[in-house]
Image (tube, rainbow, N blue to C red; front, side, top):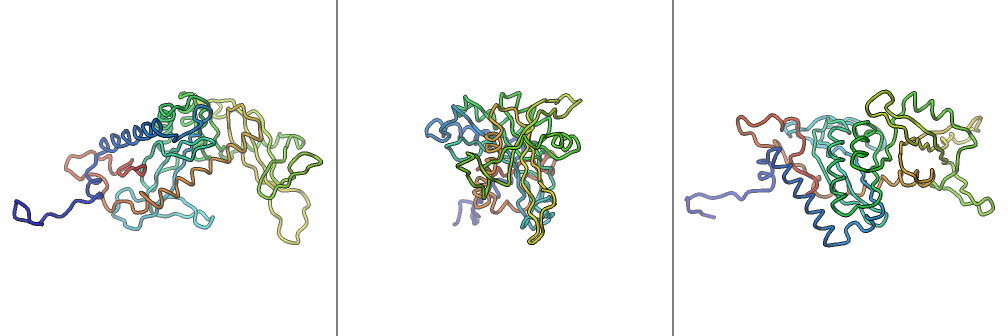
Length: 318
């Protein structure tokens, strides 16, 4: 419409508004988002059961973009149809809070360049998420769960300093494989798994999946050295149709934990880390459906070069 200046004004958009944010602005917005979660938890039963146990789940994903001019766009690893591929995109890092009776709530988020490693900035994100957990009333056990991309001394140390326990998948390496090789065949316990059958007579699960544990020292010889429980789950490999089994073959999955849960309960709790995928699905349908086009940060002369590294310029938490 006509204005006092005699011209026609073009309405501003959310995208143009976000592009004016500096790194400091985004950190302020992140603080507002965290305070909103805390206030919401105080007014509603947002995280019921947090006084007993709270789960902090951390993971990242790759949101594909197609324009080369989009700031932060880079080639990162993802899976399409179960196959690893390289795609150009942006890589949000998310931390959620949940309890056994409450769905995940985003506690902290970062939007990073597509070529960012999964664990980049994970330690500081964990600190933020754990601080939020305390503020929303998590007075009981707080458990950090993550996959092998976050198996690092820095991430685990950050969680333990904040008083949290950890349950993190261990990346396969010779030391882990040697530890698994020493496990007794009699130590394995069948667990409830897809297609498992309960045997009333034996009062046990008949399953192709089994668990056991041993003691393991992670990051030996470093300042992050930690001796904890290495819980190992093995699953039988499927044989081709018509081919008999000479010797059983297994796939092994190990995770490091310092909880006091039983072996079976520790495994069940760790596998529940997949709950974060629900939060990802909501983000993909909402804030992450169409990342802002072009430059995400201001291009004012003399502005810090930080935007080119793209830490977070359109927080997916909002």
